[in-house]
Amino acid sequence: MNMRDRIVATSRKYEGRMVKFLRDIVRIPSETAQERGVLDRIRREIKSLGVYDRVWQDKFGNLFAQIGTGRRLIAIDAHVDTVGVGDPAEWKHDPYKGKVAGGEVWGRGAGDQKGAVPAMVYAGKIIDELKLRGRDHRVVMCFTVSEEDCDGLNWQYILRETDLRPECVVVTDSTNCRILRGQRGRMEIGVTAQGRSCHGSMPHKGDNAVYKIARVIREIELLNGRLKNDDFLGKGTITVSYVDCKTPSMCAVPDRAFIHLDRRLTTGDTKTSAIREVKQAIRRAGVSATVALRTYDKPTCTGLVYPTESYFPTWCEPEDAPQVRAAVATYRNLFGETQKPGRWTFSTNGVSIAGMFGVPCVGFGPGAEEVAHTVNDRVPIRHLTTCAAFYAAFPTEYVAIRGKKSK
Image (cartoon, rainbow, N blue to C red; front, side):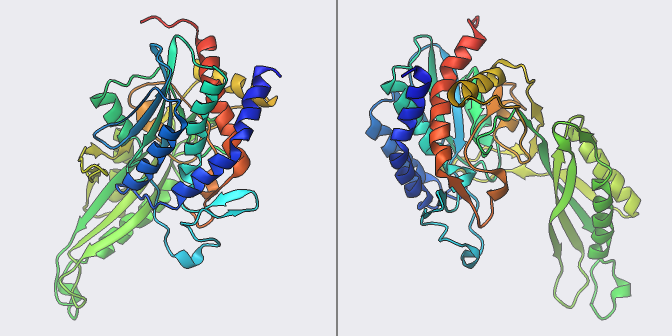
């Protein structure tokens, strides 16, 4: 049996253990800033395998497991936090049971993106068992926190505050076992309109801020249709995702109204251009309002506050980049199929890893984007073994393609 077949066969051998492990971590609620329980369970599984050379956690809350001791570092990343469940009655299966049905594991986070965790952990087991450790490289599995609330903040901390400096990163956020090489960026923008309150029985004596913001909302809707398009990454978008107002009572004219804008950035969009477009929309609405890039400053599961502005850059790797070529070669060698690398629709930790810091990234993970954040959150069991094999084989393939890297 050649090495390719041995890797695939070994990953399948551990399918049952991976499924059990995934069901366990799906049963542990882990919304953003509440990841301690799931991190403890992941750490126990890692320790039980006895193959990792080092396991540690940073002050942000991110958990790391290293296999190998070579100088060159390849990282594989999965975030372990989830969004909430919404109305449990809308779920076909209990979101915190990790039910197996139809060859899939169901539950909150199964697809987005706890399914990658067992595949990563057991990839280390495969690397050890098949003697795939490289003398000149090491692999660090990164189980990161707070991604759902602020994608990439975890890696902002890692790359600014720790000594972890990977040569490349495999981002495992929901690709449906397809190789992906980029994504649109995003921004969170706030628009506030001020008015003048008065008694609701005499609205003509006030200045209703809700009416002002309503005119802005209409212009934002029209702006969405005019945004740039990129043949690969797709169209830039903008939408109103939250509306609020302040009023002294239900019998008064509101004196303040606010909207939160979700702006997705394609090639050519910048922080400056996106803010300018919103200000132009406000002028077309014929009202006065302020525009501000939002700031994220919520504590992580360790209590650390690490503020950042809510700007998450677009990133796109060339198709001939070493890590992309290595991913294509890994999949072809393991499964006999040559993939054409695609891109994500949603946002991932790559916004900081590649977008802010220029660390080369490539995407490959279990689960489909379209089930993320839905009541159908799930992952096919076959994706676990596919990804475990991929993560075990990728490092040596990458090192071979990348060749010797100068210090």
